[in-house]
Length: 119
Image: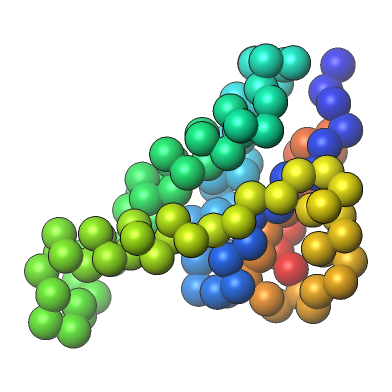
């Protein structure tokens, strides 16, 4: 049985839709496979360890200008920036979703339905 959970990633930067959407969609499979052993600490670790790879796979364009930075420097800076995310769970996530507008650069997963949405 799939638990009724809400998981939110808060960055307050709506430029990362293509990064967070597939990350949360993939997280559904991890959570279904892991079941009860997927506690908040585990989920947070999976998200944090996956975020830069998802940025490279789904959003990064090698043809972009990096303001004089090498690609490696750009990815290092982006990784540091993305590490500032907050990960909220269940009641805390639902409260944050209810209190914020829907173009604020945050995304959430309703595990029970598999729906990923931005807010």
